[in-house]
Length: 247
Image (tube, helix red, strand yellow):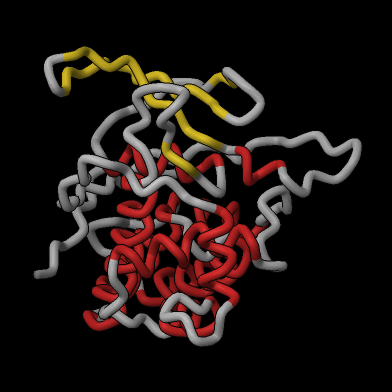
């Protein structure tokens, strides 16, 4: 079966000098307050309807506020994601047929029910809608994907255990690195809250060679059931499909 490898080649806004590290008390108070502009019920409604006026600050509270919702179940299986990746693996990227694209969208919508902020799924949804000629939905899904990735990038530079990037799913770490064009190796746990993801090819930034990035995964295990053994989802590397940049 022909494999389709997708890469997120995105134009990111420059990171601020001081990262917006998630503050649980701040996020809790603002997402629970119905008078707050970051009231979660309102934010997630805007997100799900494809509101492209959502700002980076909105995405900060959207993404990290999700960890406080009952629907956040990071250890649950997501069979729709496996089905989605199998469908994409069988696509003829140069001439995908409508039936296959509609099946991708159907599986993608189901996968997003378990992980509404998955960059890989949002990317595939944008691709499928774009291939079907629905430019409005294509643009909306790319806007969501970029917003999620910027929220993670803004949470820390990832250069040390004390300044990790914060993620809600292990897959999100790999998606962010793929979006930056940085192929990753096998991650390793370095503490009770942080993992290190090495790069297959180190690169130099700010005059210093970086061998990998640190990610805070602590939210994933906060409500871990007793006796639960976590099995990571298979990774998915992106390649060859360039999302449009909308200005």
